[in-house]
Each structure stands twice: as structure tokens, then as C-alpha cells.
Amino acid sequence: MKRDTKREALWILGFLVVLGLGGHFYMKHLTTYEKTLNPLYEAMKEQDQAKYYDILRIEVLDKEAADRAFERAVDQDIDALWERMYEASQKVLDTDRPQEVDHEDGGEMFIIFPKTWLGLYDLVDVHLGKTERAEIEKGTYEEKAVERQY
Image (cartoon, rainbow, N blue to C red; front, side, top):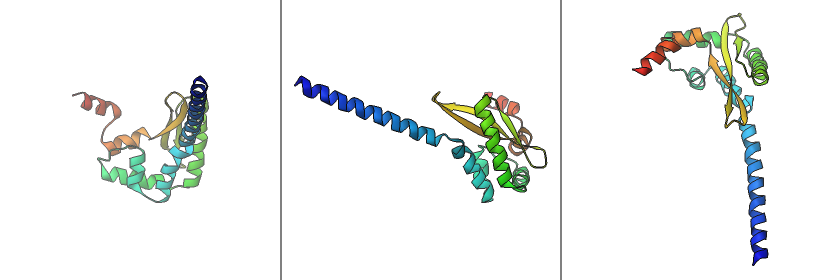
């Protein structure tokens, strides 16, 4: 009887180790920069404004400002933008500091922030530049924070 119990315990332990390693590699795959940057890139390529703002987690309150900002975003070489975003995301992961990604006209486009999940997986979080975001959401971050307090 003792022998069967040890064998079962070893099989269970082996199964848990394989399951843990598989889960870890799957999470590493899910948290690559491609999983955070590619959906935004695809939304811009497909000219899908709703998806674009959904990915950036922006509440569109000023439709005209949102239309202008989206037109500005897609009115550039999107492949070159993706390359700039990739380079910035690599810097973010290396330095653990936010990086700005500029539009090809030189103006602010995106800010990429470092983010971790479960303390094990490094991610990047993409935000629209502060000026355009404030116009689209009709207010600054500070004003929104004050509104939420009351």
C-alpha cells in the first residue's frame, strides 16, 4: 500500500510541475508586446475607430475631437509607427520607464507604460497622448479624478 501511495504522489507532483511549466510558458506567450501592440496596429490598418478607442480604453465624449485624432493617427505610415512603438516598448521593458511615441509629424502620439502581471510577466500599456485624450474625454485626468471623488 505504501508503495502505491508514493507512486501516486510522484505522478501527481509530476503532473503539477508539467501543468505549472505549461501555464507559465502560455502566460509568457500571452504577455508579449505583440499581444498588446498588434491589436492597436490592426485597428489602425483596418480604419476601425471604435476598436481603436476601445483598445486605448478611452471614453469618447467629443466625437469631433475623436474623429480628428483618429484621422491624424491613421494619416501616417502605420508600419513605421509600429516600428517606433516596438522600439519604445523594448526601451520600456529594459528601463521600466514610460516612453513617448511621436507621430511622424513630430507631435505626441502615444505613451507606453511598463506594467507587470502577477509580478512575473512584464507587459506594456499603451495610452493616447495627454492632449488628445483630454480633448476626446473632455477634461484632464485631474478633473476626472475630482469628478469621481464626489
